[in-house]
Image (cartoon, rainbow, N blue to C red; front, side, top):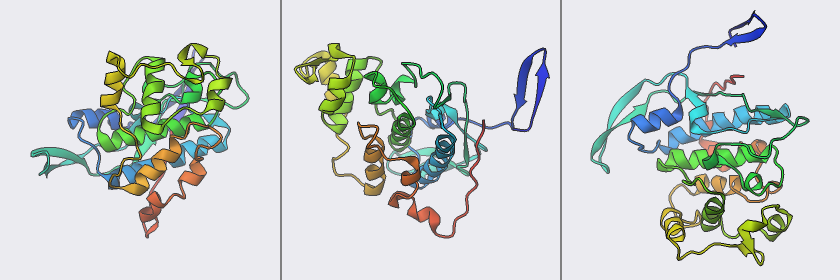
Length: 261
């Protein structure tokens, strides 16, 4: 925060001018993924910033690539031999977290529906109540998007969203199903979903299990821990920051982590 002032009863706050959001840059780069080394740097900053919120009993509730901004979006053009085209490569991946309009203190009223659809945690969809772990789920979705160049859950329907989760992470735990108010999504303890329907074929084509053998195993191990169904079992951000995925950053590197409120 640079300054604040009161204008006819309205509190006005001024911040430094930031640059493109991580989504805007991804879009301008034809949705070519970020390199893993840049994802690691951005992820570490995001986890630090949101962990700071959680330590202060706040849940952001609207984490998404649009709300993570670069301090400087200068880039270089690099030839991508695999894609046979030039791609933009960020020169500096220092980012800041913005948009605290929906941030909620632990003691405040918790709205039933939070988060932008694609980054919404299962406990929110199932109306099981939510807290800090819903931010961790959102970060997992964001990091996947940085890595692949497309959203993990491309849907606007609750049941389809749950079907995508099951396709990627396996069956929803029975305990969550039994506690959910959303009985219309389930039949005999299972998601009421027809895999042979048009929507079912779409989900099958679009979503692949995270467990499939991939490069960057540590990255996907962290992702699986962030996308754990049970909020109580989902990795905390303080633990995430100690994950082996971030070890390369500790080798003498010094990064600046900023928070924008």
